[in-house]
Image (cartoon, rainbow, N blue to C red; front, top):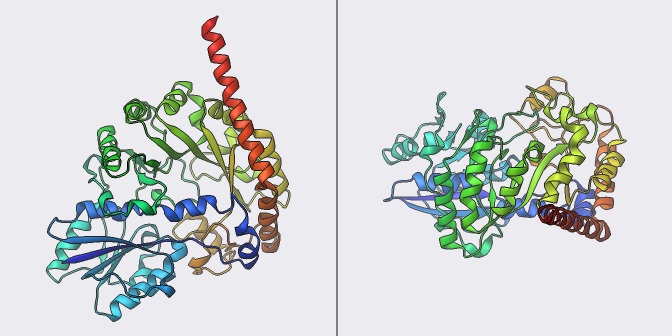
Length: 443
């Protein structure tokens, strides 16, 4: 029995102006290239749960329209971002025409299972670890169900299998992912991360994380690792235990965090010692009106706004660069937001910056709200869920103004001059910090 695990990759914008102008800009595409080059951790994880007598192969498809012969298998298991969902549907149609059953799981399948069920023989919702073994057993017996759901159960990361990193071609990737925790307490209404699959925040035992790192190091001599967490460092005790365990592993890594990581100097020091090169922080906006009620449960980001610049300086002084992520077109934004973001980046000393447009992903509270308000331009245009294409009508500007503002801001932020200036400022900031610590010890 052969199972082909297939990840749809290659995020690309559909806005013609972005294709002709914006996407040629350095920085504007760097993060999307990184995402596209990351292997699917979810597929590697379920591979680790697959019985050993089943042959498993891992594949990636960037453009279904140029794929010739499909990977041979008895069952095709597909994972996709929403932006590639329609290409995944085409892939499923080709397999089904050959008589090969298909199954889909992941964020998109969890968000719109009924839509996926029209194209796939089976749909996995929730955390796949809870149902994958049953699905494989059912398939073997010829009784695969249409939907596999955890039915309210949640997965304990203490039971997490070792992902099958050995299935990867090491030459294809510039970084490898693993997960140290799952979920996020802030529940932003536009967020389509794993909180839509696993709503409760939980951590993976440190020993398991280290075991995964050592397995990666067995295959890659000097790996760069990305922690595929929604919000690392929420649990400070777990974070510090993990940092202490990472120090002797001598790796470099990247992760995502909220701005509160800046509050703990001990943690920042440990992160630097443990090899943290950069963190991506969802700042979202420099304006309080835009941040108001972005989270469903609290107003964490709005309440922290006046301390954003101080927090960025504190993190970067430890030699950890901050990639600040902004969402343009939030309901509180006017056309002034583009100048506001540029000014904030210049004044804050951010090393790197990522700009996106507010995107209504299926399954999010934002999608439900905007659909009710009649503000979704094409409710099922999944291909527009790229973070660079506008799929909704902004509240205080036109679609054209949002698109034009995005491109203009990118042109200003990503010049070689501005990028070099930000990098030089980061190095100087860290140098001053090291100098102050040295002089303090001498005193």
